[in-house]
Length: 123
Image (cartoon, rainbow, N blue to C red; front, side):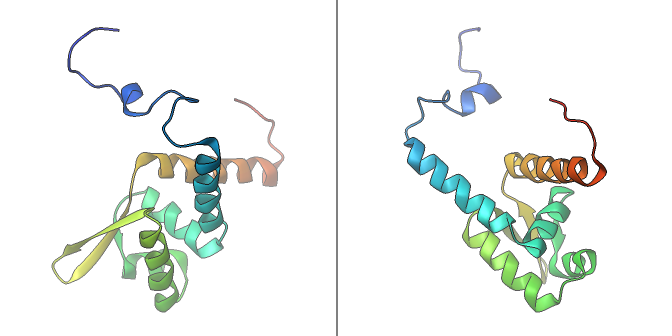
């Protein structure tokens, strides 16, 4: 590893076991994220946002959920810190907060594909 002020992705997170949060805190936070994703509409919203930013109308069309439901679920996801919102003129555009969430959604949907299609396991 070279010395200097250059940061790497590996430096962004403390090594496992040396994080400032306790294991109980980490597990509680992970359970909270998974509980939010355990709702079909919220998971569908997260899947759509994994593809890129979108507004409520786009997310409503993509998920087939009623607009009021989409708005309520987005509010829960924002409150939990999983999505962020920004104004774009009169529209509010939503995005995933970070890439870990995109990868989590991709992985859980891949696991579902394996279960549904009886695909062989792999690493």
